[in-house]
Length: 263
Image (cartoon, rainbow, N blue to C red; front, side, top):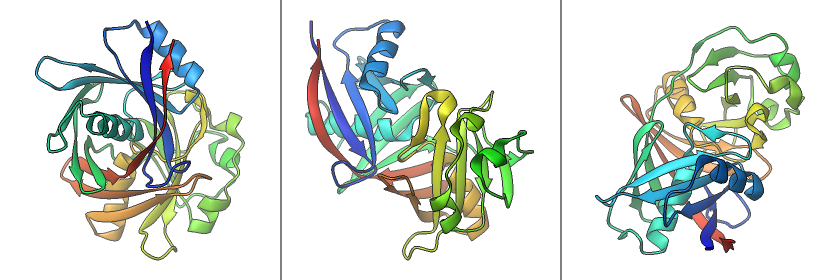
C-alpha cells in the first residue's frame, strides 16, 4: 500500500528557501525501523510522522536521516501546515501534538503559524576540546542547553562567514552546536547558524528548536521578550520568537513544494 507524503519548506514564504521537511500522516502504525529507513531515503534534516488520536490530536515523531530527534520546530510547523492545508484539521482549530518533548501546539495567525514549545535555556559551560577550533571562531560566551552547545560570537559577520570543520563538531552527548550574535541587519534582533553532523546534518537551514535556547538567551541580553531572528544558512529563514515564562512561542510561515507517495 502506498503512503502519501508532503514536502514543506518551513520558516519561509518562498519555495526553495527555509527548511524542508517531509510530513507523513500514517494511515496505520508503522515500526520504528521503517520510519528511520524512509527518513534516510528522504534525506532531509527531518521527516515527521503523524498518527491521529481519537480526540483529534496527533502523535508526532521526528527522524533525521540517521537518528530519531527529541524536539524539532520546523517539522512541527510543516506538520501543522499540512493538516490545515489538506482539511484534516479546520483552519480555526489548534493543532495538538503528543511528542517526546511533551504536548506541543500550533495555531494560525494569518499567514503565520505559532508554535508553543518548551524553553531550553543554556547554562555557562566549558567548550569541549577542539570545538572552537573546529568552528574557527573566538567565543564571547559558551553555554550548554538540554540539546546543544551555544556559542556567542562578536558579530553577524562572524556568524555568516564561519566555515567549520564538521568532523570536529560531532561532539558526544549533544545534538549539535549553535553559533549566534546580535544582528546588524535592520529589523532583525539576533542571528544564528546550527550544525549537527553527529545527528546526520552538517548544517540545518532553519532550526526552530534551537530558538528554544536562543530566545531566553537573547531575551536576557536584549531585555526584550519578543524578537525577530534570522538563521544565516544558504537557504535562510525568519523566526519570530516570544519568551512566555518557561515556554517559547515560535512563529513562521510555510509553503508546500512537493507531494508524492512512498510505494
